[in-house]
Length: 97
Image (cartoon, one colour):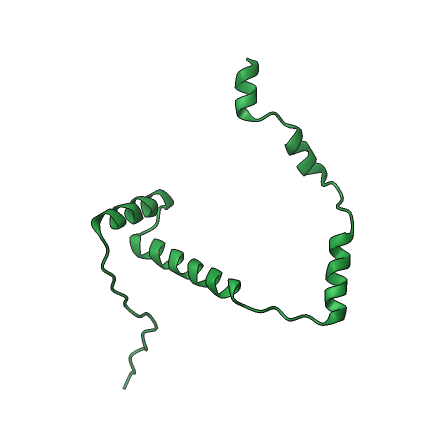
């Protein structure tokens, strides 16, 4: 006899004021997502940020010294970035015309 696949999704119910729901629906529409997809992504992103903000990163003294040494090395210009920064901004172009 075939066994039904176990469902891994869990329903979640929330009570929201109309104003909050309208904002969420508008943002979801702008992103081309459903309300469920938008809220799931936003909730997961917020959860990941909260975890990262409270996660202790451990490193050996040698690893920390290597990290600090890497920070002390002067940066090198990236030609593509230099080109972008030399371009006039759209609002500067409009003022020149």
